[in-house]
Image (cartoon, rainbow, N blue to C red; front, side, top):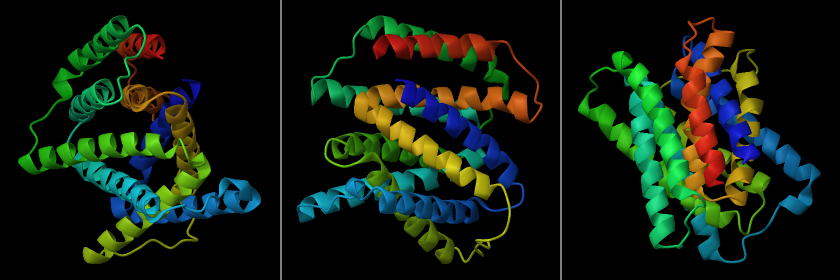
Length: 276
């Protein structure tokens, strides 16, 4: 549980860094450079701890892990384009739908029912109702294409989360993180070449250099949390990231503080703690 909260915190910090970076660069440019650095960091760790590297015993497992990472990489690309044209409200609504889908899969396929299910869900719903009600004036009408990106993002993240949960039963966290980041680099690299966008200089000093280690910690902590719990708890906990992003924006970007940030976050975290 602690790993999932830590992951959400670092992803929220990453979102604040995104706000700084995308003022100067295109999203795909940042993804390519960031995934290049995170891949190098991960490979360096694997070299130091060679026991973390595992060869795939069968072709089917190789294909399954690759498919998991590819789906997750597309989810990231869809998320970036969706958030460019929508708000955190829309993002949370679709993410909640993804969590419901994940919970349904675990209930009907794996027969997993979290403890204190009703009370935990009640507190989580109350927390997000407080947040969304106070954020209702910040909503905006979005185009059909943006809804399409949000749907694809939700589907990719839900499916890849469940598949990664199965992978973590066999493979090391760092190994899967490196594999995922390499797939993100390949997908983003192909996409940026297709769109004929320029790439960033690898050695140029910018916030991407700070973003990369932050993302590594977020991914590794998230995978540890996913391994120790299940995809439903992981997806529900990740919903705290948008609220944490707003709290960090107050601290780092000097944005206006709202007291409902604290009340909604407290309710959601308490609900997740009951479910775990």
